[in-house]
Image (cartoon, rainbow, N blue to C red; front, side, top):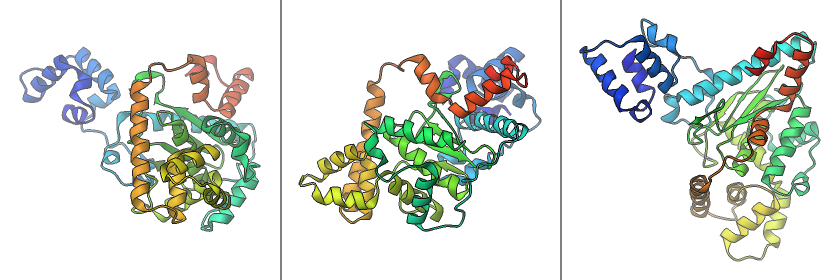
Length: 355
């Protein structure tokens, strides 16, 4: 058990003193005290009960089999990802029970396009279902406004959208976008999208659209693709990327604006169009590549620059912003309203609601 727990974390997080004790436990020269095991549990974020099992637990995280890109990182998911998934499963379970008890209808858009592979049909249907016109981005000033607009439309459909860059409220447990950018858990009663708030604002927007498509198709997803890949991913992921691109940057509008832009510097041209469509340079580069306006080398340069810019921005960021505004952005409006109604009706206690 101790060897397994040690493999789930890093020695840096445990501290030199605890690591020294663990080595003594493993070679049999010392036995751990309960307090030491409790300390190990807290620092490794492994439930205390796991340390008293006969054999290491086999944690079945079914969402992992839906990962967009196969990766070594997700073969052994971090405690941060596991705990986030469990937290969202609890939110979804509560919402399902709440809606069934209050006789809500199922969310009809979930799985409504199952087995459909026509990019245009999927995109047009989703626009119609959401009340999203083709030029919706013109109503927004930037990617942040665009994200909030689309999130609001999803809430009107009854789709829960949660977002966080850390595990719960623990600022010492940041979520890693190299491990995952978002995930979606399909349910006809309470479909839930989780966005990794550690991602860039424009990155969150694409992740939101990508996971939306998964809901309409009716398939779970753990989105862990930072390069907007074209190869090595499942056919459904190719479709989701293509539809997300079409919803964000309609191809007809893209070609018109690309051809009318006279800037000879391709990289500057991509940046200018990203501002027009309120999205990231990476999404524009993806559209340009698909339309044979740029080659793969330029595309890879844009993606690499975007990833480097993200790292620089993270290093330069000093403040987490206004606490209450950040806290509110993490929670879905539909979920909060349902929780308040349940408390007011006496079905849920204040203690449970806060938890």
